[in-house]
Length: 266
Length: 266
Image 1 (cartoon, chains in turn yellow, green):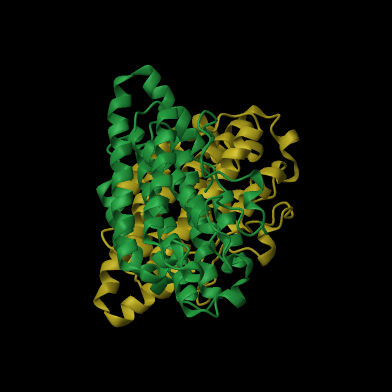
Image 2 (image 1 turned 60 degrees about the vertical axis):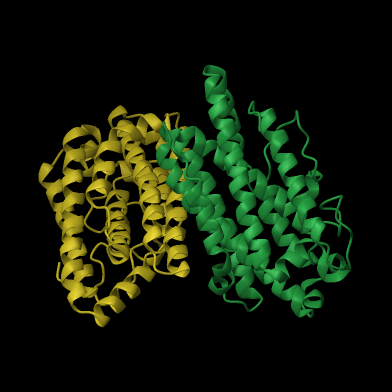
């Protein structure tokens, strides 16, 4: 996924346009992240470390299930669309998520891992997230599509810098090949302009989405040692729990700025 | 869509493997159909006839909405999947239908027609079909995916012979680029083998699906003169209402044979 165009608030974690290149330069994906030894290695070399391997399998499993769950939710939310055109837009996002899922699943199979087994540990957290945040109308669905797309995009960028070159290429390619949520921004802005009261309700909604996302993310971090350690650059560089908090902070901040740009006090 | 491999019952309307070629030979798509003047013309020539043009706009609109509705239903039915793998299979079908929708929609835009306006007349019939045939469990969902894919495939083939070369190329390309339902056949066969009683229930279900499909199709035929006239080869060759009945008969027969091959007395 690619985060939305909201020129008023440059995304603090944004990367140059070339981020989706098939072979991005090591360590360029997120300025804050240290260039680790792993980031200069390919999968064959990096995966010799069983902790790193386990972490990547977790990551790919979590992303794959996340995309599959997003497909399901977007397809469901497409039903709320007021027009056929709107329905088609959300369906297009859903189809794009499904193709991300396919790539991640195929990569798991390629490295000799059973995709379903890799996804399963993340099913409960992602299903719960979507259950807790089922939109009650079309605008809530749009805000969720946008927020979800943006948070996922931020997370992909954060994590990309900590990955071996092959895995990073895949993650950045998945990140790069959409941007479907931009239509959501226009629609939400127009709705708020037409009926300013709507903004208050949607701002609460966006806050609830972020809260639920963080709470499920914490749950995953607590459960999955190898993944969490890698997320904070721990495999090669020593574990630093505070860095998990900082990563969540950066993602939350970017979210807050995007919401403000959208006319929603977050 | 491509109909399923059921070698025991060669589909009476089946076409050679080359059916999906970008430039199939005129009039070869369905043996029963007469080679009309239209079938030898390209869109620019054929569309000079306003009746033919209206019929093709109807056809593309009906197919486009059919694909969008199928996307929605398959994505919904994917929720019933017992495993992540099964879910992914149905989601893959849904994504494929969405891409068919995109091609048909884009073609409408290309010939200067508003896709939504072209789709709208068919919304009620297709929505009603899906509302009347919401699967109550995973196996019903699979049978529906298979039956729907096969009927659509038969219909695409029937209609292809009556189209100008450009429209036919599009219709055959959409027909050709899937075949996802084959996994459904295996699963249904295995379920019946494990629990023969299931066969009786699913046979009833398949009959209901076909009945509902025919009833909605009749409704469309009654409503849309230009489309119906074209479907029976009427634009260039004189209207023949009995031919509508024969087309429905051929599709029903093919369905019956497929169901028998699946172990379901239809």
